[in-house]
Amino acid sequence: MFDLKKKEVINICDCKKLGFVGDVEFNPENGCITHLIVPGPGCLCGIFGREKEYIIPFKDVCQIGDDIILVEVKKLKDIEKPCKCD
Image (cartoon, rainbow, N blue to C red):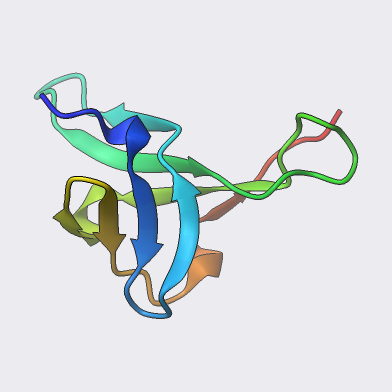
């Protein structure tokens, strides 16, 4: 099994670096990965907080290489999830 957390995620639609995989979601019934979770840039209201994270459906993954994961996301707003900075 390969380690996804060491791979950088890049959107092929705009060549934007989204970050590194922080976690994955999977379907417990069949064990298949459903989403990649990529923490976004740091939050201004806390040193360790995050302003947002990207929840990328695994169907949008185009290719997994040795160092990077290429995804095709046409609208980043569709995969952004706000984080709470408390």
